[in-house]
Length: 401
Image 1 (cartoon, rainbow, N blue to C red):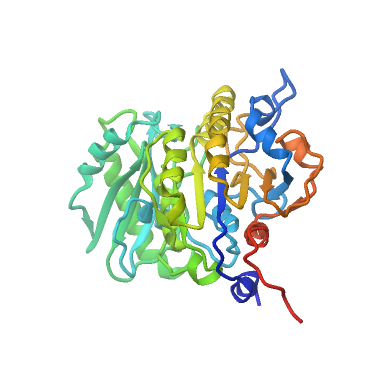
Image 2: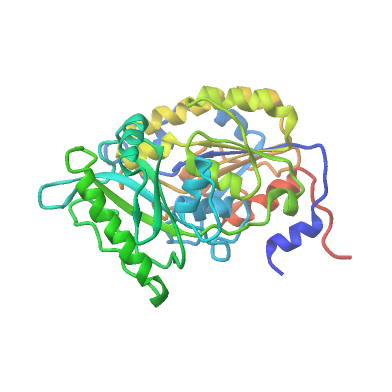
């Protein structure tokens, strides 16, 4: 019996409320000039004050040394074994924009990107073109069909797109075209299993078509694809945890993963202040809130140390709104680390803070990677966050006689 099956048997309904605040890419690495990470440089008086009533630790999103994608990292945060419940970013991207996926569809996460005259990738994100420009370019692909397979290209956010294949006999057992590094050629999409040969041929034909259609659309003159996936049904938060759960997220992929596990997706503005306002306005209607802050991760991926610091400080300024609502449990952590030094996701554990009336407060005085390493929670896998949240909200009965 896995952890979720145990929790399903132990969980009870109560009026207590849980808020899971996920600061995307929260963990960092110290820069040489100061020896401090982004979190250590940030002025966070409100989180520091909350520490006096909390217990802290470090969380491994998947396993020590494993660098996670956002999909498996979030599944782990929500208590789903990321090795058992595997889902590609394509499905999450499509669900995030509300695309009506059908059985048999193959969904793909895509980037508009920049390539030079030789075809070498010079910018994987096409200079972060606007969502409006992305929508214009997606319209170039309306009505595309290759070998009887309909292909839909839809804007997600900025340079990100979702590509959906609809037809008979499609497979998602395909390698990516995105090498996830600049200075390299895009990769040929190859079948991982013999049953995927037809689909790989169609996808490579589509990539060639995209090059022709985007030839004069610099900096978005190419498309990179990864995260091939088919839709599958997951057990929901309501079924497992008996929670009425809601998500407050600005980025479609995170709305998609929230919908995948049965959360309601609440309306919110694009800025951090608006997200906390949405929490405030909807607090009485739900008993679990997933509040996702995206742009800290984007700053890390761009190598913008200073901007990541600014965004962490902006989150901290909104913590009093959260505290005034008096949730029974508050958890603050990241889905993974995105150090500006690396400009990418990394394997480093994330700090975690857990507040409740029933936690054993520890002696941590600074919410940071270094300080949380000595916290009372120790270092543990993210998959156990939900059981800790439920226990501190007094939503779990005793196991066994």
